[in-house]
Length: 383
Image (cartoon, rainbow, N blue to C red; front, side):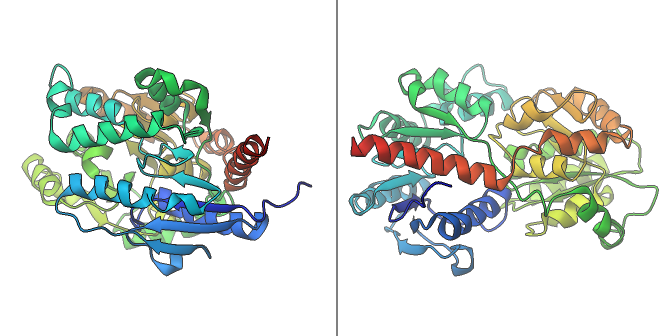
């Protein structure tokens, strides 16, 4: 057994804890394990972070005054970087030049703009990239990846690794693929089945209903509009569970009303009970425009649920087409109703295959991979 990483002083830079989502659950669990099992001295540099989600880490508040999102992101990056010299390693979960490790949890901004332009029917992303905010984010990303302090870039899926290498070829040697991990004991078929009856009753679902779940914040990026449109072309017994934080839900309610499917949607909104949603569902669907490694898709597979994912979703690599689910281009809205119908008709035996497809993505494996990277970087520094 290897020696603990003591007295490694590790800082994690992230603006805030969003509170609802798989990424937040994953980071909190990882922090707890890093401290308990490796003895790592962890500090979080953030604007705001709830005490209950610190996992025993210390918090340094870095909350410079800002007006608007451009000043917010650039101001945090510059202020946080001034705190880095006090640590052995800094793992940034934001675009903060000066960190040694960048966990590209938001993927590559240029690729996000490309997919957003496709959704809006634009020929290319140049018009979007010319906007003040996007110019600032692209500049921060380029500065960070080319900064002399940068030593490793964590991509949480093969898709993100490919995007990084394509848009920033010079950083390719530093890319390490470390998939997100989940609690496989918590997300499992027995736990889902145990809660199924109560969860479906609470969501007003009877035995005839077939429930498709979307679980994730920012419904525009997750493709909620695509699912609402698909719902209108599916039998009335099919309902949609919309769960996750969304700042502008009215536009989706308006769309559902116009299509006459508002009463077939359960507007769950922000929730910290992912299992409750998965227990009520018969499949999970993410027509995401650009989704690096959504934990909800891994959690659903771990629970034995089939998934329908966009080809712009990093976890598409986990899907055994026609067995554990289907993959569809996020921008091909005409193909989604058929894929959803097929997923809802998959045989019950698909549950075992779904579970098996993510058995290697434990939280323990992810933390071990992070620790192995820290050891390698520290050993290289000490030579």
